[in-house]
Amino acid sequence: MSKDEKNLKGLFGCFAAGVTVVTTLGPDGAARGMTVSSFSAVSLEPPIVLYCLGDHAVNFDAFAAATHFAVNILKDDQASISNRFADPSQPDWPDLPYRGLAGGSPILDGTLGALDCKQISAQRFGDHLVVLGEVIDTQGPEPGAPLIYHRGLYIS
Image (tube, rainbow, N blue to C red; front, side):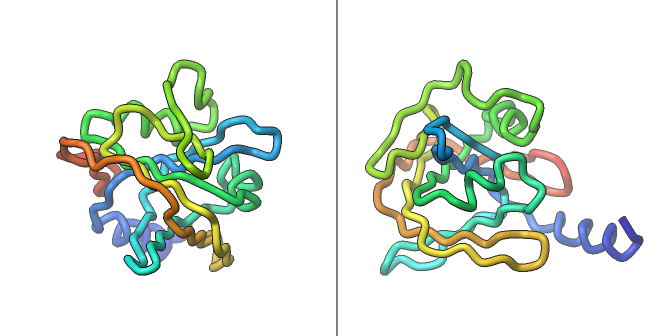
């Protein structure tokens, strides 16, 4: 990484972001998930959200081809879940309870809430795929504070 890239990454890290786990079902029907802090609400009418998927992501192909996905908004005490889904060497699902909503994507138990979405667009920009989804079902919001990521650390 060049000096300019390190500087830019440091500047991007100055923006505090909520932490989510985006989930889907792969072509084989297996649950897939990854930690995402590049998530945003786009529109209330119709309800549209977006997340950014790095082209280096372990489950890139499954997410890029998905027709549906869910955004699970983590609580401030769920850093271990964030770490699990951020680490490609860790198994995603063996002991995590989840269920599906209307679109069928896995909804993790115990989060602040979840958005079940139908993928409506995926466009490549630089080294990321920007994925937009229309919200078709929701869970929550539940009481609690969000997990926040800032300058490479979780903060509360």
